[in-house]
Amino acid sequence: MAQIGYSKKVMEHFMIPRNVGVIENPDGYGKVGNPVCGDLMEIFIRVKDDKIDDIKFRTFGCGSAIAVSSMVTEMAKGKTLDEAIKITRKDVADELEGLPPQKMHCSNLGADALHAAIKDYWVKIGKIKPEEAKAEEGEEGESCGT
Image (cartoon, rainbow, N blue to C red):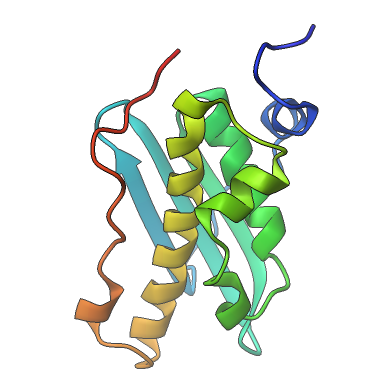
């Protein structure tokens, strides 16, 4: 059954998401949400030799939000933290072969949660100061269309 406006890759990551779960006592933890639509994403990372050794997510949200969470964890796994922090919102959407315009904000949440988890780890090890780890601001007026 085809979904209008969703790529096969989005559907695949929604139906069979990768890296779902929680890492107890993670090295880094990121949580972001969009109060307009209620989507909430959490990303947990385990770091080994400055690389993302393990990554899990827990998402409360629409199918696009789940697909984005799954994809961003796949993209980040095995990368160095410096490589993973460079994963952009556009990279995630491109890797999913596009999202409908009204769902693009979901790609923002995935990248932002990943960045928040990395920054949380960097604060813990003293690489950056807590004020440097402030959450990235999303675009104004984002909403979950149907």
